Structures are given as C-alpha cells and as structure tokens.
Image (tube, rainbow, N blue to C red; front, side):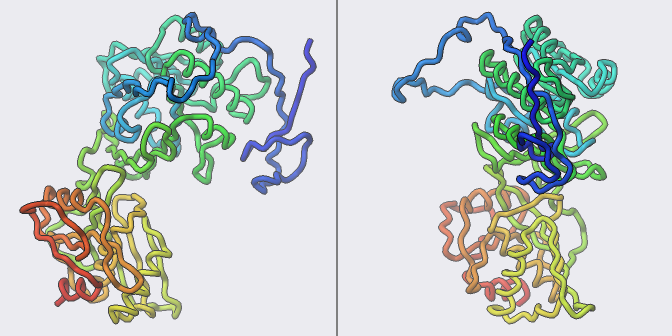
Length: 453
C-alpha cells in the first residue's frame, strides 16, 4: 500500500506549507492552515472512447495550426451570450460566483431548460424534487434537461458516459469530492483536484462545463486562487437581494471582452433579460429636481444612459465629507478641485455626496461632465433639463476632452428621446443630420453658462 502523504494548506489563499504554522505568510491570516491528505491513486479520471483522446499531442509550426474559429453554442439567453462574447465555447470551463441567494442556481437552471440541445444539471445542494419545483416555474416543458443529484465525481462521470450531454452544469464545485483525495468536500485540495478532473473532461470531450462557486465574506470566490486561473471564464453575479435587478459581469474571459455587462430582473417565473438597461438606470418622474444629470457611458459594446445624483450641502462638522457610490472617490475630489479652481465655485467647505443609480460601478471617464453638471446643479439648486445628457471627460485645466465612440452614445441618446447632448468641441462626429441637438463645449465654464445662464 502506498504511503499516505499529507501537506498543510491555507484555507484562505491555498498556499501550501511543509509543516503547520500559526500565520499564513502569504495572506497574513491566522489559524487558517489545515493538514490535508494529498495521496492520489494512479487511475484514469476520464475515459473517453473517442480516437482523438488517444492521440499523443505533437508540436506544430504556428503556420500549420488551424485558425478557423469553432462555432459557439447559443445558450438561448442574449445577456449571457453577450457577456461570454457570442455564446458558449465548446470545451470551455466557466466559473460563476455570487452572494448566497442572489440567483446563481436559478440562472443556470433557466439556461439548462432553455438550451435546444441535451444538458446535464448536477446539483450537490438540492434534491431532484426541489429542482423540479423551481423548474416548473421557469420552463415546465423542457425535454432536453437531465437532473442529477450527486457529489462524487467518479459517479458523475459514469452518468455522463450514459447521457452524453452537450453542456454540463455543476452546482456547486465546493460540494464535489473525488475518491483520489482523502479530504473533506470544500477543502483546498478537493476543489483543486475536482476542477482538474472537470478540465480534463471538458478538453478531451469538447463539452462545455459551467461551475457555480461560493464566495467568501470579502466577496472573492472561495477556495484557492488557482481555481480562477484554471478556468477559462470567471463570471460574477451581483445585485442586492432587496432589489429585483441583477448584474452579470465578466471578470476573466479568454474568448471575449471583460467589459460586457448583462442585466436581469428577478421575477417569480425566473430571471427576465433586460434588453434596454437604461429603463432601470434612469428615474422616471414628472417634476424636475436639482442635482441630477444623465450621462452616456459604454459597457463593452453596449451604450448605457445612467443617472448621476449629487447632493451639495454646507458642512456641519467643520471637515467637509466626500462620499461616493458607484464612482471613484479620488476622481470626485479631482472634479471638485477643477470646479473650484477653474470655474470659481466655492465647494471646499461643503459636503458632497454622489450616487450612480441602479447599483452599478462606472469607471468610464466620459461621465465626468455629467458628474460636474450634477454637482453644479445641486450647488445652485437649479435643475438640469431632463431631456439633456452629457458625454465628455474633464481635464485638470478645465477643458472638456473628447471620448471614444461618441457616435454610439449620440445615437443611444437620440433613441431614448433626449433632445440635447453636450460633447467636447474637439470631438469629430460623422453622423449626418442627427436626430438630437449636439452642443459642443470646450471648457467647464461653457457648460455652466449653457446650463444655468
């Protein structure tokens, strides 16, 4: 019998140590190092009958490699297709993380039920009856979705050989365990080994695998950091459980952009795709209020109209407060300094609070102009016209700098019914006869004069 080999792993970051110690030298956490058995039997993990898996890999000249793109699988969900870069890539491994109760299992079950080809949904957290109850609310007529409740990877692979699915969904990777590692499910070595087995299966069988991953209290995916390096795509499902809207964001994508965004609405019948995100990011009201401005921003290839809210008030406690939600606090301080130095507005002794509605974080510099307009509107207590929007970057000398892909921003604003958009005078617009008035401004003083006279 082989000698039992053990090692010590940090349960927070996955660093391996030859012996126990109190503090992890990598993440500086205390009492997180645990001994785990790492003995592994030399047995095949995934046995495929295809001739391709039996071939030995040979080196090829780069000119001899086939560069034709493989056809992606349509998930039936436009938002997921956009975030993934056009669909599910065959043989890829996707990791989906998010807060407990945010809707990760609902999203993937809904996708499994929508798929026009065979899918296998493996759950280690719910029984088949529980999944059936949820599936009846989403799509009770699906004929291509198989449900399996199992946590042992060897049993899962046996069922895969019988069912031969086109897509495999695992809920969740922390509940799986393999008999080749004598450690509890959810431990560092079990997560790493189970993921390695699934990667081997996905690459040899060309079947895409989607994993659900738990997250820690600080919002990162639980388990070793190497888990995120091993997979092809890392998705984050965000939102507030007290609100109905959810945001699907790509943190890593080997087959597409990481700037794309998918928005869903949680309903009793599942998650509804929000094709026009501006409908939830802009408040619909009759009266005009000061301190609000509409910015035209981009998330990947998608233009969005978002509402910026600002509140400027006299500082009560001597030291003025600067608070932001969804916007960089350091950039807010820079904009305030520019407004005071270049435009003459006395904001140094006032509290400034800034909020980006809809619960999204925006790092597009094109919303600088809208932030400045919202702050000036609140300071002067004069509302900005509700059919007016902004797209421009603010420089340190008070100049309005041009932004990229301004034509898309203008067309999106015109489509949503805005009548005026402020852009930089140095912007080159190629649109002939635009359906919206384009106001060209070169300095922040021109914006203040055009808005408040």
